[in-house]
Amino acid sequence: MKKAFGIVAILVIYYLMMAYLIGMFSGAISQDAWEQLMAGKSPKIVIQTDPVAALGNVFHSPAVLKVWLGVATVLLVVAGVFIFAYRDELKIHFGKEVPADERGTYGTADWMKIKEAKKVFRFGSEQKGILLGKVNGQRVVLPADTKYNKHIAIFGAPGTGKSRTFARPNIIQIAKMGQSMIITDPKGELFEDMAVWLEQQGYDVKALNLVNIECSDRWNPLDAVADDMDATVFADVVIRNTQAGMRKAGGDPFWDRAELNLLKALVLYIKETRPAQEQNLGELYRLLATTNMAGLQSMFMSIPNDRASKMAYNIFAQASEQVRTGVIIGLGTRLQVFQNRLVQKMTEVSDIDLEAPKKRKVAYFCIISDTHRAFSFLSSLFFSFLFIKLVNLHDTTTDPEIRAREVYFLLDEFPNIGEIPDFQEKIATIRSRRLHCSIIFQSLGQLEKIYPLDWENIIGCCDTKYFLGANDLKTAEYVSELLGTKSIHTRSVSRQGGLEGLTEIERITQSVGKRQLLTQDEVLRFENEKAIVMVRGHKPLIVEKVDISELKESKQLTIRAIKDYLRPWAAEVTGNTTAGQVCDAGAQSQINTDQSQTTFTTPPENSADSSEGNKQQETGEDELL
Image (cartoon, rainbow, N blue to C red; front, side):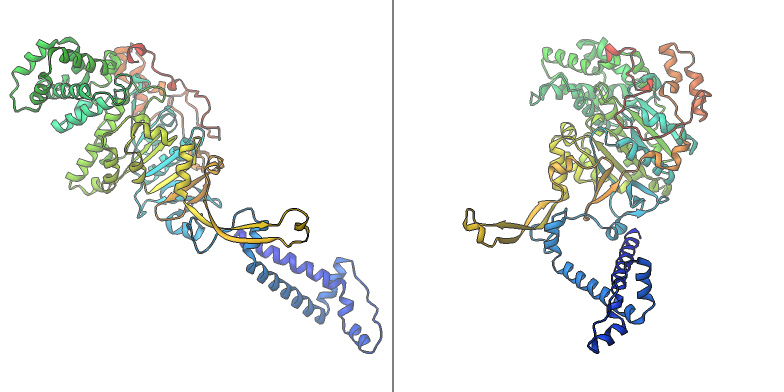
């Protein structure tokens, strides 16, 4: 609409200017002037410089009016034909962009036009789906009923607006659809800003807080272990995510395998022999820390050989006594976080139901540290069993509401979760169970560090790639390759040097060349206010980022500081007698009188943290690290 208005305005100005010029010399083309000329007389021509009078000469004389319209239109057509015929040459001489070759000799990469975009996305402020930005003032949404999978890979260096322009707006979008969501929250800011509003929308909100543990709902990982396969997954996740600083890269995996078998044996032993209240990781660590080799042998002696726990233990027991001692010490070192009383209590029982996201509206926040990986194995366990339980529930239920409910995973700082075993296979298959992952990472190097062999497959399983900005060459090069190669017209001018070149006509050569749609350095310099959306099978689309402050729902958000989410169970350990009172108020979705309405402006994402909830838990910190 704006473009059409601009064209009309230019045409009006052009015709008025031509009318003025014709009107200035209207005396030369009037009927009296022609009669005098035919009679052999020299007509007296008066040049009219007054604009109003000149325009009056045109519109008051039918003959001059016809001349004006004819001359102006003919000149316009000739100019149009000339521009069309020499458009490539004009672009070469005057254009800012390199002209594309329509034959696509080397590639046909180009930016998505609005006509194509309307076939892929929905435009408007009330559209349901994932909000990706705006074009010409209209919001661009990947619709809920899109034919593509709704996995999204988000490339976003620090300060590019991952939280403000993607995570927060899409928490609101998902809530408007009434679907469940699982959110990773490295700084705890998403929970502080969004939890109260989600409760007001009817959501069951829980927080697994691995930074401020006394402000966390409880989750017992052993509650998710139902059989020996679950125990295998459990042990594998723990071993994979507690290797930092313990094994050198490329070292002998013997110790890892031995510790895995011992851990699996202990998990199954506790599940098979201990009462429900003792089936937790605190009890497992107590066994490991207080039982010597003879005690372990005695524990497993009475278990039949056909039990999975006994089989795993027998593999461990075949090693020499010195090796077994080393394995016990190594496994104890991996699990040393359970020396901390808060960690033991947090994993004692479960307030968080892993199957609930498929049964009702829930929002689970997983608050993870972005400065250390002491609890990576817990967050990895949480997500590993979430996928297992939700997939299993979907596949085994006949309830149409459970099968129809969608669960969105907004995984900010995805690599900080830790390694989820076989994640590339999970993300490739969970779409059919209505589970959708948005994986957010700062750079390819960060993702590759956790998934060195599978990072390309993980990104490849996402039909939508969303680029917010990059600071490193590897990510910039990868995005440049994703955008593709375009064929372009090139022009070279040559002339002989010296005195001979003064009289020689320059030689101009035009040919077809190629270039990246955006080169590596152009990707690095891409505007911070814009983003690039790449959907499988389509050209990339440039959009403007939509800040959370632009959504009307942002005026309804209320901050609840993490420190005000103290859990009643933590009072037993910390001695904080106000914990239960604060939590009871939170459970009723009521906000304490000292809470204030959130005002969203547009500060930079990398601004200093202001809430106490972002500080690491000090109690037992030395033991945890």
